[in-house]
Amino acid sequence: QVQVVESGGGLVQAGGSLRLSCAASGGDFSINTMGWYRQAPGKQRDMVATITRGHTTNYADSVKDRFFISRDNTKNTVYLQMNSLKPEDTAVYYCNARSGYPEFTNYWGQGTQVTVSS
Image (cartoon, rainbow, N blue to C red; front, top):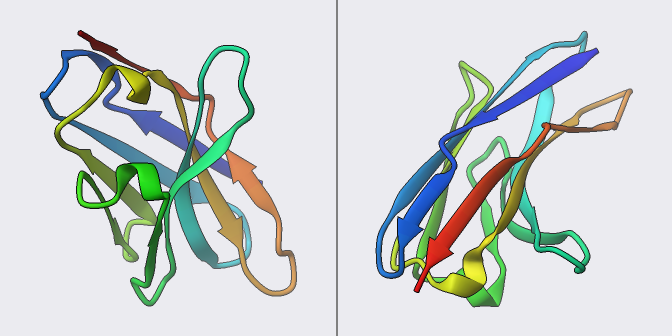
């Protein structure tokens, strides 16, 4: 079983920056894609950014050129650098880790709150 633990959320003023971290540990299979998703009150959970083991990245249009995802494969850790934050970025941010062959299972962290004040 893989454990996923996020850290780094908090309260920041609009225009500020925050860095989220997430570590995946345990399990019997390698971790392939890792990513960040977010869910605002009353809304569905949406993809923010993902990154493969080969460091190929994908971003939601709303965060391109403001958020940057990176990972350390040796530590199964993924980071999300969030710059130029806006009030609409306020949400609970969830880390996702997807295990590889033959399991192919999504594991989720407990979420970390990010609040951007105007």
